[in-house]
Image 1 (tube, rainbow, N blue to C red):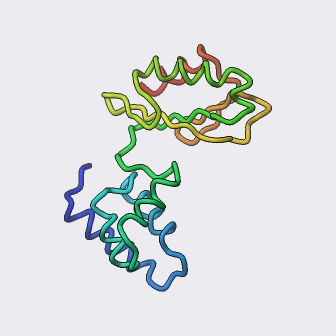
Image 2 (image 1 turned 120 degrees about the horizontal axis):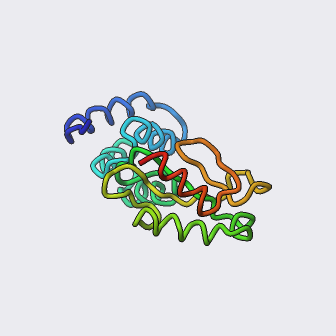
Length: 156
């Protein structure tokens, strides 16, 4: 479902109002907006900045610092591959390159059919089962190219 800018801004105002009086509200507001829309629409940044008496650059800086905030809608499925040292030492770079080639996308991109968004993540806490992945919030350990192909086939 695609919302109009007017609808997005109206819901953003509701979220901002719900966070009135909260100390350090920027991160909770960004989380709430992403939870509402699946991403943080660019049109909301000036509204947030104005309400919190911050510059647009400050709001954008915080949002872009944290990798979990998205500027664009994600695909139907989100595949995260661990990029931490343990996973890299167990073939994570090879698996990541395979994922990018198999999906035809780079990090933070979504396949043309809108089915899969590929994101790096730094440590899933599954180091003993490296390389690790997460598909739609479900952890998967000991991922190799064949297992990755199975994961991708399961969501396409």
